[in-house]
Amino acid sequence: MILSVLGTQIMWYVTRSSGFIALLLLTITVVLGILSAQKVKLRKVPRVYFAELHRSVALFALVLLAVHIFTAVVDPFTKLGWTTIFDPFGRAYRPLYLGLGVTAFDLILAVLVTSLLRDRLRQKTWKLIHFSSYPIWLLAVVHGLGTGSDSRYGFALAIYGVCLVAVVMSVWVRILDLNAKPLAFRLAAYTLTLLTPFLLVLWALSGPAKAGWSKRFISASTPSHSVSITSSSGGGLGG
Image (tube, rainbow, N blue to C red; front, side):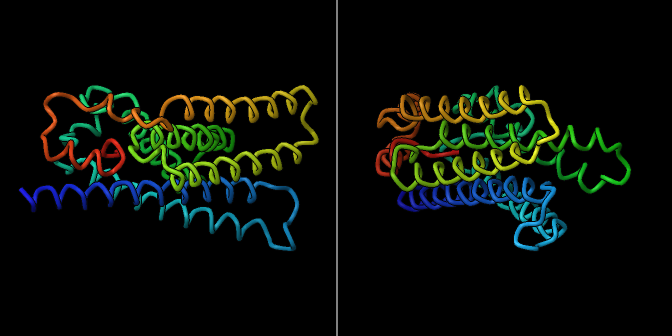
């Protein structure tokens, strides 16, 4: 039993750490993507450099996401199974937030595949698909906050906060660069980038940031040794 508990703890730490690193890399990917789209050079650095770094970080994020998903699936506490990849919302373990995470991963794959096939796609089609990077990032944040048992701790909130500020500020810079767009369009974009973070923070403080958030996901069938790990880790094993 001691080995079983130790193995579950290690799996939990790998799952959560890989998830956090993947979120940071995804945030960097979004920011670099915005910078590479700017019409002006930043400190005389060509946009192509940002584009190349953008793709490299995105691939690295995908690797970390694969590790995150693998450890979550094989974790004896979650009992997800490989069918979760195809039916995440039908699981007994945190189905909504788990499903959002799997959906984000599927969209990331779509973005990366279309990026590799960019020369064979129409520019408008590629841009439309690539624009989904913003909702992908938002889904990843909601997934992490919703499934994470450590979402109420300072280090986790700090990571989410840094990611949120980085993306919002980058989007604002991008909007400032859209001088050719109508004023109404830019005002709507600013409003959206203000309202979305506000609602996200409000939800996080009223739910995931509270101590009893993850306990509602523990069912009566949860093994006793897993419950003990849940309590010592912050209320639940993050997916």
